[in-house]
Image (cartoon, rainbow, N blue to C red):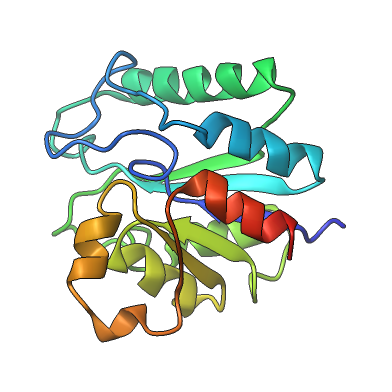
Length: 181
């Protein structure tokens, strides 16, 4: 049971995404059913981790205190339902910094694998972008695509990278599929 892990992208999967970036606790708004879905994973014995690009830090649009506040809000909402997130990993870099952590690169997922001592092969990774799919595939995880966030636009791109990717309406329906697998 120790290797039952689910990894989630944040913006557009757990909470509403914004073209202007999610910059404050007030702008961090959970998508309908997402908190309950994560709690259900917790209750079923899954360890949940989050991997999120947060280039707004590099762009000076938010501070680490802002980011910590959003993640505290997420953890508090989950705790109210008896759920928890094992770890949150974020990339603070801009798209041109050439780091190894920013999705589509696999650095954050590799860090989660190391810190949770789990082989990522076949582990579900839920995202809403081609970058999420690429990062999942790079570590052998199983990509899931949601229609929330950038999901509809990503699907409309008809990218060959979408071949074989499981698609669901939202995080709640992905969790339904994982738990009934």
